[in-house]
Structures are given as C-alpha cells and as structure tokens.
Amino acid sequence: MSPPHFLVIPYPILGHMNPLLQFSQVLAKHGCKITFLITEFNQNRMKNAIENLGTQINFVALPDGLDPEDDRSDQPKVILSLRNTLPSKLHNLIQNINASDGDDSKITCLVISKNMGWALEFGHNLGIKGALMWPASATSLASFESIPTLIHDRIIDPETGLPTRKQEIQLLPNSPMMDTANLPWCSLGKNFFLHMVEDTQSLKFGEWWLCNTTCELEPGALNRWPRFLPIGPLIQSDTTKSSFWREDTTCVDWLDQHPPQSVVYVSFGSLAIVEPNQFKELALGLELLNKPFLWVVRPSTDSNNENNAYPDGFVGSKGKIVEWAPQKKILNHPAIACFVTHCGWNSIIEGLCGGIPFLCWPFFSDQFINRSYICDVWRVGVGLDKDENGVISKGEIRKKVEQVVGNEDMKARSLKLKELTLDNSAEGGQSSKNLQKFINWAKD
Ligand code: UDP
Image (cartoon, rainbow, N blue to C red; front, side, top):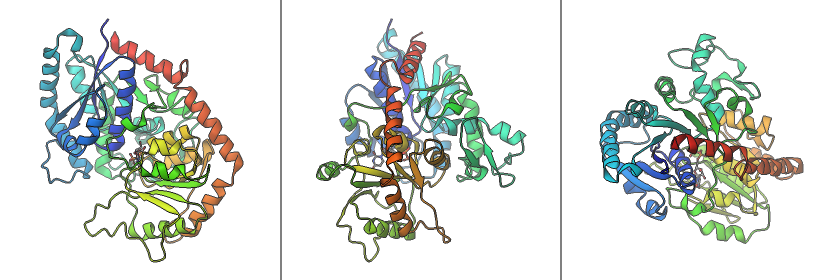
C-alpha cells in the first residue's frame, strides 16, 4: 500500500506553523509524504530557514490575499482574507498535485490548525479525510468545544463570550478551577469569540483532534471526547531543523561556559509584547538576581524602539540577550535553572521535556489556564504576581526566582514529569501508539 500523502495547512503564524512542522517531520519519519502549505508572504520572509529545513517536506506557497504592506498582526483581517482567498486556490493546488505524479501521489488527508476549520469542511466536500492538529492544550480546545454548554448554563454571554458574572468553574473533571474571566477568548475580543464559535463547528469535519499533549498531563480533557488524540510530546531529534525563524546560536556557546542549573532563561514566545514600564522593571529584576540570565528580546515592532528601552541602572553584564534563541536546545541545556515563560503551550511542553521548573507570566488567551496546570496541578512552577499598579515588580521577580531555584521538591517533580512525558513518545508509549493509529487511519 502506498504511504499516505498529507497536505498540511497551518494558520500562518509561528505558534501554529512550528508545531505543524514538527508533526510533519514526525510523519515523514514514518514514511508519509508531506506537502506543507505556507503563504507567499511567509515564504519570502522565511526563505533561508525553509531552505535549511531539509528535503523531507515539500513546501508550496499560496497568496494570503493581503497587500504586502497590510498589517498581518491584525488577526481578524488575516483570518477573513485567508478564508476568502484560499479555497479556490487550494482546489487548483490539490487538482495539480493529484494530476502530477499518478495515484501514489494523490492527497489523502488534510491536517489543519486552529482558525482554518473551513478547510476541513472544504476537504470533506471533495471527499478528502481531515484532521485537526491543535497548537495548544487539549483543555483549551475543550473550552472552545464547551461554548454551547457555557451559553446554555448562562455562564457566558452568547454575543461576546464574556462571563455573565464573576465566578470560578471547573470546566472538566480533573482540571484546575478557573476564573471565567480567564476563558481563552475573553482577552481577545468579541469578533474573535464569534469566529471561534464558527471555527469550532467546522472542526467537527475532522475525524481526529490531535494535540501535542499526553494522557497524564490533561486526563480530564482527553477522556471527554473520543476524537481527542494525544500525540505529544512532539520532539525532533534534529532541533536545528524545526523552526521558521533564524536562531541566534551564540547563546548555546555562552551557556556551555556556565555551571549546571545556574542560568535563568526568560522568553515570552513569538507574540506577547511587554509594555515599556514592565520591560524596564523586568530588566532591573534580572539585574538584581545573583544569577546569570539568558533573555530573549524580540526586535521591537514600534519604529522608535520605545518598547525595548533599557532603564538606567541596567548593565546586563551577567546576562546574554538574543533576539531569538534555539529554545528547544536551551531548555535541554544543563546550565538552565528555571524558565520565566508567558505559558504558551509549545514553550510549556518544551520546558516539561527539559525537566525545568517554571516561573509563570501569562499574557492572554489560554496562557492563564496553562499557568494553573503548572502551579496548581503539576506543581512544577510558581506564578509571578502583579502589584497594586498592575506591574510585576523587580522584587517579585527576584523573590520568585529564588523560591523556584531553591525548591528541591519542585525540581524532583519536574524531573519525574519529564520522564513520564517523554515515555509517551518512546516506542510502546501511549502517544506513539496513537500516532500509529492515526497513520493507519490515514492509509485506509
Ligand atoms: N521559540 C524559539 N525561540 C525563542 C522563543 C520561542 O524557538 O527565542 C519557540 C518556542 O520553542 C516555541 C514557540 O517559539 O516552540 C513559541 O510557541 P508558544 O506556544 O510557546 O507561544 P506563542 O509564540 O504561540 O505565543
């Protein structure tokens, strides 16, 4: 039987493209054929990185329907444009691929990410199987799936998704209690909520909802619906070939010169923006530590660089600052003592696989639920609290770093959870079996 041919369609931001790329690499390792769709805009921006990603995957590009100067951080605009532009182009693309190399090459299955639910419906109408690869936690996916129930129980408003009153709920059995104001759509506005209601409906055209997670991490969410399939942790043997952005590898040489568990790693992923006041306070907090730090400061998007202005008194001689780090490598480096994170799901899975304790600094979306898992359920980290002015102070940063780094029980739990998590992807592990089940289904 010929191997399945997957057409992988991520929503074109890094937090979706990276996990779908890693998943594609795992599928390719199992002999599957992969065509990976990117937008022409990203193809131009990430040209060098794509060339470095190897030949296992065939990249194809289509326009996103926006003008070159359009603001692609405006998510509702991007979502709408893709939806209007891509279907007809995708139709031609699939026809061309199917016509080009005979039966062995026909697209057998679509794999999409969040915001691209329409593509599953589109594939379904063409008789092509489909699956969702969710780029965040199973719990956050379950929360979107629960929207009709939350509306029915009058917990949220049907028009805005906002809580009808202040309360804590337990969304799923075995999941942490959560403030309804921290439901993942509440920080992203009404239009995003309405889009996700629609997107989640289309996701039902996907036979499987694959998640980069494990049964032990989120049993409540995974036991609830049979279509949830944990296949995590997605790990790549060659981490240099798993990112679309250019990484500054000088920080690995720098880490090599530090003793075990001595460096504080600070990174807030690809989207979160630290306000200028908070940025200064963070810089001063790192300066106060009696430990070296490795800090990822992405180039500022504002033209006068106000966001990234370092305060008076910041020397930074104990630290190393880079614009983008090879994070998976960093989190597996023995010199790392703890990870100050925005609690993005990919970062969390990577931190768990490194056995590193966390300091949680959530910004928006599912990051608040993720913090609860880290601090209250798995107990492998602590949260950073804001002061009365809404700022995480330098004193708080120093205090919590010391608290985490000095906590031997927490370190032991982190190492234990690392082992449990990694076992899933090893031969005979649950995620590894689930992956095989998925590939067999795609072959049928
Ligand atoms: N990342 C990286 N280098 C950095 C910072 C982040 O490679 O300097 C990667 C990180 O390994 C993760 C992704 O960017 O895979 C961030 O995803 P996450 O879900 O944590 O957050 P998002 O960017 O979607 O908010």
